[in-house]
Image 1 (cartoon, helix red, strand yellow):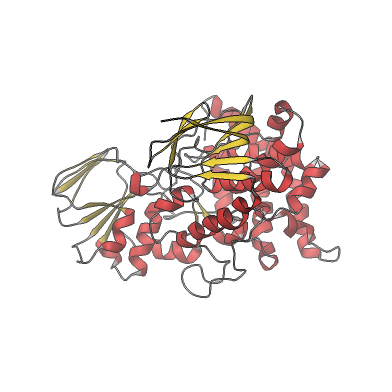
Image 2 (cartoon, rainbow, N blue to C red):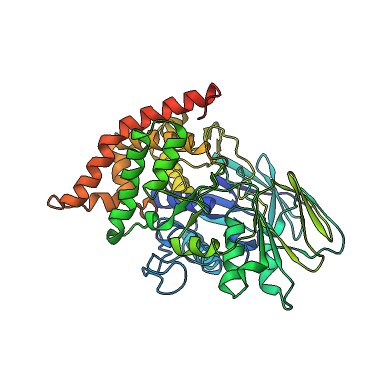
Length: 471
């Protein structure tokens, strides 16, 4: 079979949210040509295989690509997100990205899209349906949007054993249950575990019939503090000011976390259990109240094996039955946490440059690629904000995020770009403050006055962690 050859300016590997956001900015701000390849049959990446009841856990307003709104501009009027800006469902997001590709990207004539293709490296890829091989001569750069290795429950292989005959399912299969079991066992304390518990409770399952295996409790983010609309200014920007104050006034790392909780920046499931995990999971207070109805929370470390009559954990065992439904929520959303330079010769590796915002980060990286003359300058503008796992990771994440914001704030063209980018979320909210709005101006002053002391405190704590002193 003859190898088909193409030429392009940018070869984007992966048409998930990051790849689509990057491509959108390149198309908008340059005249470059793009080839996008992906293993899935349509754009959207992991959204194609996400569990059917998944939603965004932050507002739809700043998700997707910059040039096309995802949000319908409304608030939820029912459910556990009531009163807050809407959260797009997985189906809505999947349709959104498909429409962006079909209605915006392809009609430009500057995008070629190859779904169901496997990238082999060095500009080579192959159709998974026909075996047709392709080679791409890349004029500018390959953009590797697969580096972070997003994993989802439906394709996850657990790192523990499950005895034959045990009812063990992926989170995707929860809506397929047709016969009530004697109970449910949720394996995992992260966002998917939270979603599984909320799904069961919202559908009438007795909380006493739920066993929640939680190897580590997590610090959680209050969704009310992520709302990018003006009516939530006191919550959103106020939370940022309170965060700066809590860090600046803290006397130790533990004291800092306590102050952050007291200020409403962080939430936790059990006030008597000190969290050791931080994955940036975002919930509403109503969801938290529901989660607290589950009393059988097992804190004995990770699962080692699930048998027909017992579950073996790192620090003990609990009883179960083969008829219980055991739900695997142990997959990590991101399986590659290693940091590498975003810009290299002939290669761009998108990673987060703003905490919690991968699509904004991708759009920002594309803008920097299009607007700045060399990779040295680009990398200085795009310090990677590390993805968190443990609670202490929050310190480095926050310090790097603050440093990036400081660097960007000194660049007038970047400030203007962020103000006009809908994925930014909060720049327009801050800019909208009027000179006579004393309450909002005081919030901004609190944030500004505490920024440098907070950064100094974070740097001191990070130095103490390196020396093995974390109290």
